[in-house]
Image (cartoon, rainbow, N blue to C red; front, side, top):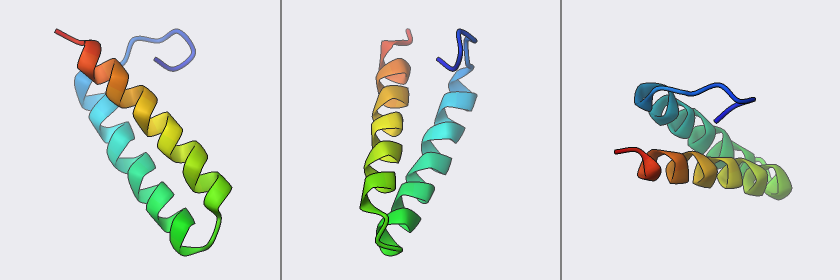
Length: 53
């Protein structure tokens, strides 16, 4: 969830897709810390998605 707002499944999937692409780009550019942070956010969204019925 982002700042207490409930996101739709579609919003979560979109966020995962966008953040994954950004993490991939950060890795290519050598920004490993940024990539790690983005991947942590992706993991959080995946956990949120997995908790949905």
